[in-house]
Amino acid sequence: MENVLSLGEQRDNRHQKLTTLRQQGIAPFSERRFEKPCPIAALAAQYAEGRSASTAGRLSAKRGHGGLVFADLRDGSGKIQICVKQDAVSSPDWALFDTLDLGDIVGVRGTLFKTKTGEATIQAKAITLLAKALRPLPEKWHGLKDIEIRYRQRYLDLIANEPVRQVFIQRGRLMATLRQTLEREGFLEVETPMMHAIPGGAAGEPFVTHHHALDENLYLRLAPELHLKELLVGGFDRVYELNRSFRNEGVSTRHNPEFTMLEAYAAYQDCAFMMGLVERLIVEAAKALRGTLRFEYQGQPIDLTPPWDQRASFAEAMQAMNLSPTSSIEEIQAVLAKRGMKLKGVTRSQLVRLVEQLFEPKAQARPLFVVDYWTELSPLAKSKPEDPLIADRFELFIGGMEVANAYSELNDPVEQRRRFEAQLDAAGVKGKARRIDEGFVEALEHGMPPAGGLGVGVDRLAMLLLDQPSIKDVILFPLLKPSST
Image 1 (cartoon, helix red, strand yellow):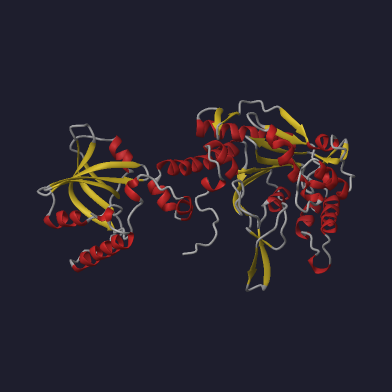
Image 2 (tube, rainbow, N blue to C red; image 1 turned 90 degrees about the vertical axis):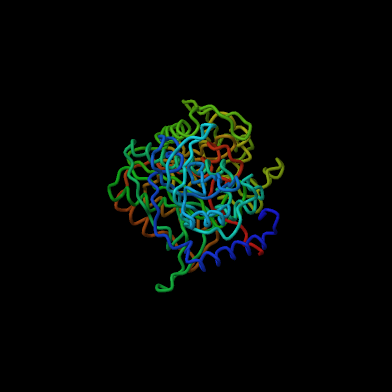
């Protein structure tokens, strides 16, 4: 039996079968197409006695002996049983079926019937080998347990672990639901560049690449924000992008250097409008994926029932520690050290990371909007009319995770240039490296209407709605260290 052989012996065995098949004139990879009118689950559901059937899938089980063998075929939708009788198929097909291994991709033509146990089954009349699997599947389809293999060879994870397959099917539904809600709200989906001449639109260390023809370094985008706001200048009132963005940072249960963001911008609206929009987006997504607004995330209760009326003020939390936007970085560092809040090498621009320590423990069952960020931490946001040191901005926390960020967009080109310059001054950037995005400032000089902007971390939202503990569990191919083998 193959399952008592070593992996190397199993592979040798399968390669030998491949050689034998080719010597017999059978080309296991030569078929261009095979008639498969519907997924296997739909075929089984549409059962009719004696109906002709043609389907294909991966061979996942074989049982029986002598002149009668039963087997299972699977695809992404489910499985169906096939019955192969020696006297019902041609001699070449019977001989071929006898050599098949679990994992082979097989096409079957025949008629439908039900066994004594009521299982829909195809009585095979013809067998076609569509692809020979030269490596065995995970042991007996019991599930792939090795985390490293699961992430590195996701295709095996999808074959062996049905719950994992369902997570990614549901993630696809999440993306569709977000699009549907935005389209109902009048937003147009657009695409913007992934390579930027100047990194911008968000804080973070960019990935650098090089364009040989131009002999210029380019940066993988930190966010699509600036290009999307240029579209507001161009006359599109409501735009969004489900985008891939990149941050050259570490990997954690909540961070992957390549990630999916939803960014949406609405002209003639503001931060308050975006609060309502993100509530509607997530409520509709929860209904579609969970069928309820009350569920558990990693054992803790979540209640997304509107209205989302919980607020917490960043400025007030800092004021309670006797800190304000005018406090020096040395004062801030001293206060944080006394309170055990450690932010290694903290700079003023990194103070926004304090939110995780200040508010995440409070953001459990009910959604929490953290508001009143210092303006200096929000260089692309408008200040509140009553206080120029406080930005009209929020971050949304659910289940202890930040899942969204929004603000009333700054559309004053003079103030935007001043803030870009202040960022460079704070970072100590001088000389040729001192570059601001002149193209974006020029766009603002042509006039951008007042607008609200929203960013939603789609991967984190998927974690929440699909009850997954790590961002790697909702990204099909997360970044991993290079394999040592």
